[in-house]
Length: 302
Figure 1 (cartoon, rainbow, N blue to C red):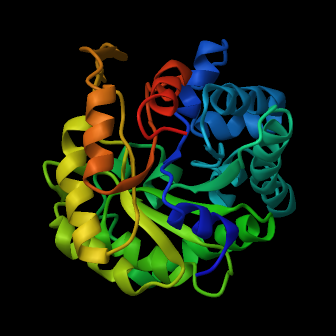
Figure 2: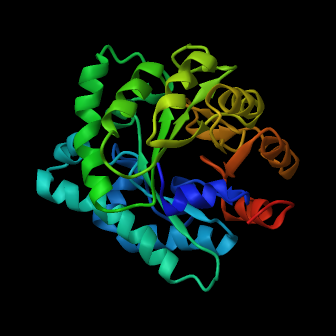
């Protein structure tokens, strides 16, 4: 698919993604202990989302991913929002990122990726790290299509089909983006060389090779250690640019409700990912502006 963003991706210069939205909002003092997570602030504190985007753009990110990961009609309905208001909030996420881009003093192009989280994100029970929801591909397509239509109408530069745990859900998303005239990237969450649902990555990435709407494939919300093999497989199987934005490498202790361990996200790893074919590199959970700044200012950065 031809678009300005696709052209930029093909131009040769790697693009830098932003880092985690939730950790940036929490660092600013916002409580995200809610089923809507950061999407709740679309209604309650939209200015905070703009400031979070701004911090990443100013750190050198070329691409901001919107706060819509858990923004769905079903999720908003549980909080009492009607369908029209829910659609407004989804579209607002794109507008807030655009506003942040307008406030940055830079000559480089800045891009907006509309986050499209998996079905499991709406359930808010950790299902996005398991997949296998018990739904058909057709049912998952019906879930995703209305939200995708709203986001496409808001005119982001690209749709980020992200943190997908299951090849079946990827198949549904590839069907759901058809005809929207907005390019997309498809990004799995993986563990040990397989999707979270257990499928081999070669099989999981293969359908994206023939999807015209998909201009990049890769992984996110995984351990940095899982990135190299996934990048190599995605590039080899699809022949498309690869996106990689893992977590910091710390692990979540569900009992203590805190993060354990140390970050294993390093500039050296980023250079290796790029050498393996990654064209869009950034971070997910626990990766903040300082790390994005180091990516952008390093060799081959933005």
